[in-house]
Image (tube, rainbow, N blue to C red; front, top):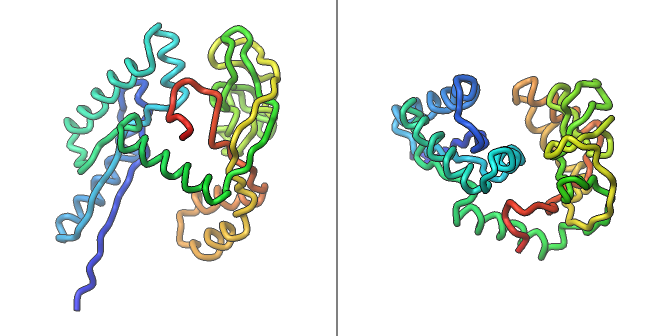
Length: 245
């Protein structure tokens, strides 16, 4: 008796703040498309899903620079990216966007389920505030020098050069990505997912059960675990995103 198998292939979501380029295609979408086409040729049940990330900091920064709304930016570039994939022959079964009704509803349901199960913790913390822009700065609104590898331009949540997860308060000489000014600290209250609570089973699941992963992926995950996981904010002081239900 032949077993029935379904395969779901997803791809990284490009920010809808500019067009896709050859690097996007070569690094993510062409390899995924080749794999999906191979499975289809074998007659397997496979679906390929992607979409535009329309809630990232790059969108709001671009909108401020152009003097338009974030919705104007994502509407423009989502259409451009979607059409580019069609022209390049990337065979998505579904190409959606994070401002869609189904994404908003699903994300809200995930939040509500975890909240009802008591998985979140509420914490008051000091976060950077841009007095010139008059707003709190989420992690990606802050850049500075990485305290580990000392690369410039590290974000408030991660250094893209060395891959180390960061908190905004760790950055050396932090600057606002909105105004370029030096931010000040103010208190604010948010919900957090305590990743440290889940570290034991994550360590076993990743390091013991998935040694077949690519060396760089396995090594990066091990590095994060060895440094100790930190609670991760699931709400932020932003005016562009999915509202907390």
